[in-house]
Amino acid sequence: GRAADLGRRAMLIAESDLNDPKVVLPRGLNGYALDAQWADDFCHALEVQLVGAESRYARGYDGFAHLGKALRQAFVYTGEYNQSRRRRFGRSPEPARCDQFVVFIQNHDQVGNRPGGERLGQRITFGQRKLAAATVLLSPFVPLIFMGEEYGEPAPFLYFTHHGNPVLVDAVRAGRREAFSFDGSDHAAPDPQDIATYERSRVQPELRYAGEHQALHAFYRELLTLRRTIPTLTDSEAAREVTTWEAERVVLLQAQGDAGEAIAILSFADTETRLSLPIPAGDWITRLDASDARFLGNGPAVTHQLLSNGAVELTLPPYAVLLFERAIRNG
Image (cartoon, rainbow, N blue to C red; front, top):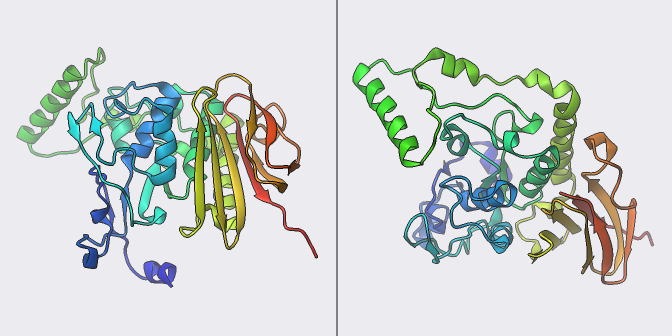
């Protein structure tokens, strides 16, 4: 099968921000036939819902509907006008598959191109970290986890270099100064050639054994386990529906395929939210709740089993993450 074939060769993944499916489409469809491409739109739409449009990357992704569209099809811009680019850009991702798009909370660009190299986790609460992780890992796309993100690495990831050519070193330093001056930043970026800049960027994986780091690491591990054990979550052939409630800042993800049916609820509200959700009639088993004590939550938001008659009224805690799988009746 395709998975076995990919295991025998290197994968080619494009770091492209063109929002053009031709990057991954087969040559018979005039594509470049790469295995996958990054979907920067997903990251930008998610960042805005967590911290606002702070960075130049996130401008033009301020609507909650943008996050819904990113969860639905990876690309937000499919021909619309974008403020940052000052032009229309992008195309519909069809007929590319969902497993041909790589999504993430952050990557080396979003972190390394901040003057202080702050990771997104340093700018959001612990509850938001879990929500961000679930948004990526409960999507049908291929997740990228940026080094140390899975346990909440506090060290910055600064832009550092080790060039031997003095002319190149001076050019890089001047380029960084100019970039942050243009961005309106009040903070000077560390010297990329200074060994101390590199040393400050070292990760500390031993942190994952204690406190919030341990709980966050456990949450990531659980999400990754669920991706493997509930095939519907990542089945590129599954029927999917994404519903958003902008005022309440809630997203409902539904996936139905040959292997079963799953529903995820993500709340970006910073307060408790009461909402009636259109969950298909039947019995549902709770597979994940970010409010569980093992993830340093305040206690489960729902019971182990949920019975729906077509709609369920739920009280969601701030930054709720819930995952349900349809119960299979015996006999």
